[in-house]
Image (cartoon, rainbow, N blue to C red; front, side, top):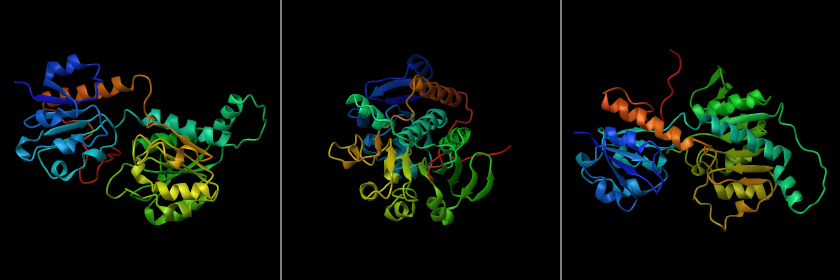
Length: 326
């Protein structure tokens, strides 16, 4: 008998549903239906990945919980609740690798938009105003990437290719990293912040990283620097960011993720000069859902064949651990 698989969705299903259904007894659940369908399931595919519904629907009896949860996203912060993390039966996997290059391209686009003031150009076009002005170069500018996972590495490679000077902040200090050059430990964060023209956030949201960009970090950034966040909104103290942008100490920010999504209409971030707001779409390119579905089908096939799953998350850390070399 095939495993019972529950697919959590919001009306959009994987393109390869037939292939999935051939390998598992598949049922589809909305967030409202999940509490009735999840208990006793062998596996859960979270096709909609930023949701409190899984924690709310999680069976009280640990033996009734699914023993595999796959998330159609790179970030798994919505799934790091105690009942899942502390259950040794439950394997958590994510969609690491799908978003790396698309997000790197998006970061390059955001940096170019900030440096060249494309929003200002578009506003002048809308008003039919001819306003020649100088813009900034990005060649030779310094970028600090906070987060050394595959997305951060893809960002570093992209930015180095256009002549930017890149370093990173990570758990382990390194002087000769192949992508970042120098990786600063947290103890070296303040001097690195003081030198960076752009700080790019690409870290996962975990208990250790929540609120890591607080008022003191923002105050340590180089005057006139810009912040780019393609990680998670919870990494940043948004109130402190608004203050530093309002007083002009920071020149701008490009934000694709927010503490509360959708970003509330009353948020001052919508209207601050030098700020680009996008609706958590940095990794969403043509075909991205197909890539997510194919990765899950590969893992489902591996499970059926008794092989090792891809992208197993270290639940204590909240991300897939790096395996380098070999």
